[in-house]
Length: 266
Image 1: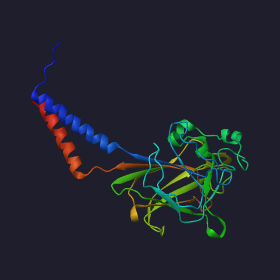
Image 2: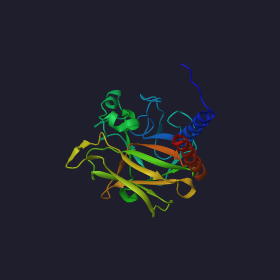
Image 3: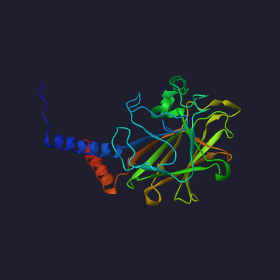
Image 4: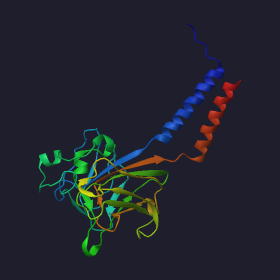
């Protein structure tokens, strides 16, 4: 069978290729995985790199400033994380239940999560330990900054929190506009334990905050606290950046589509 392409067909294929390239560029995302707690923190463990899914993590202990976090594919990024309040980490009464210092391999293996439901966050070592607010006279809210973000991107935060026998069933995760933490941008609330059954930790749900534009100085100002003001819990998060197509790019894509459909009508 002989196939013959006209000039019109060739132009149509070229336009389709351009549109496809534009859509692929707009769909490209930079993803960073952060685990709160690590082998140098109290009753914590690092996530192995790569994890069972072939992804790379940043396992952070409280206190230090962390520049140039690695992306999910082990490439360096400009993303950094620093704390604005004291933050404690532990694993006791998290998804693994009672844990030791240092944790044993058996305790890590006993981490009870639904890995499939949690997606990229469904890794035992990442779910095992958690961060919590300072408590006491310092208050229960924990605050940190995600710095070095790209102003040409919007971001999605997927947040996993899990803890047994908490004062509050749920933790509220909030984004603010600057380091005064006074102007709320967005928030989400997640049950870290089952209401009415505090012995049952969250094993299969995460909170999602999407469409986040970098705020002052290209930073996301993050706070977490118990929904009724008690301690809040944060085990891990996934930060996904998505480029925002420029208006000219959108116009070109729309024009190309119109040309293709126009050809089809003749």
